[in-house]
Image 1 (cartoon, one colour):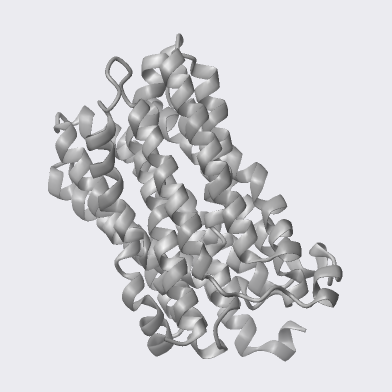
Image 2 (image 1 turned 90 degrees about the vertical axis):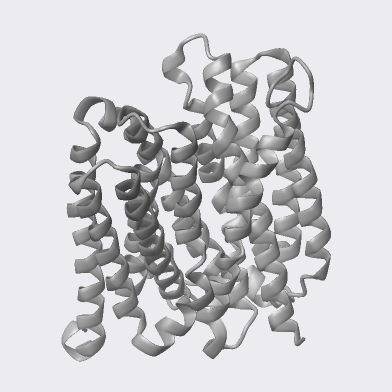
Length: 394
């Protein structure tokens, strides 16, 4: 196996371990928050804290990787996971809600570092393999969709009298495994002159149509997905469906998010980047139409699977576009700013999801997603027009 393909395989395994971490947190954080919070309205604050930590860490970790290399940055991210998991376990053991939130903020730095796995894959391969490399690394996340929930079931009662403490301890093991796997990552650091060069000002980079559309579609894909996914268990509970049925729907949503990545790169190479991104927008709109048409388990299942596939097409496309907007010397700040925008969007949508569902209901919040998705589609069409008429645009 050549070095570039080995790097993609290593990063895909790390992506699977990261998503295992995420799915365990999705499974237990809200439940633990509800158990520990004196004010039950704050029960989902630990979930939001995860994205706050990610937003705070994204740009600093990206700049750290520019100076010290990808493997060092990913190792630091996994070390934050170990520290945050131990703080969370101590918080649950002590029954301290605010200590739990602090631990989850620290854990968020691991997610911030892990979001760069896809960029590292693009950096480490030839141009003609770049889109497939991004896609294959994201495909590793499918393992986490199954491994995480099963791990949480096995570890929840591990420490008698302190439910869920064992689940947080399990995160330490996955982070240590990630550090071990990273020993096989061989991405050379940037040359010294690129590490010391800032490149163009961020404002100049941001004026590029390709940058604007990449950030727009990346944030909208994650924002819409997070908004509807977070509210789905609430909507299913309100429709008198069992928790096991909601867990089934979320599990298949994660499959929809990551399973297409085995072929997304090939589809983009065959149909074109813009076409696949527009198909992603269309699939998300079909998801909304299905969600509006009924509240049976099958309606929720099909809507969430399509939501996952639509996210995949839009997000892989947005990532590939972003890599076209910067030089190697500029990639740290560009990638850090892009992911910070995504995490801020996730903070807003995770907070808004419960409020919109409570105040306006499941159908109304689905309708809110349509104009945002149309904006993403308009952005892709505009970029396609710009590329066909470069002289007129200039």
